[in-house]
Image (tube, rainbow, N blue to C red):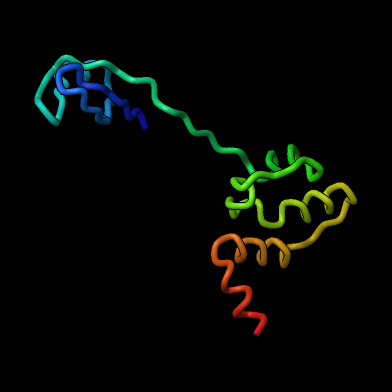
Length: 113
């Protein structure tokens, strides 16, 4: 989606706007003060890394920070990497359990009771 960020040079406010065509930027006004003296900002970008790419680049020997352990997508990554190195297929049951752990970790504990 072409969502652009702008800064109003009159009130220093920032806002986002969906711009589908270049001409739509003409006449764009600040929602805060109505000013038209705007500057387009460079936005952060996000990109998706597939599970396979994450697995291929995962190095279990490097130290991990808090952000690694806080990301639920990393649950089971080491086991999957080791299985890949050994040429072992862990099967659909393993994938199902991982998905359950990643989306609702507490349910796995409840299921084992």
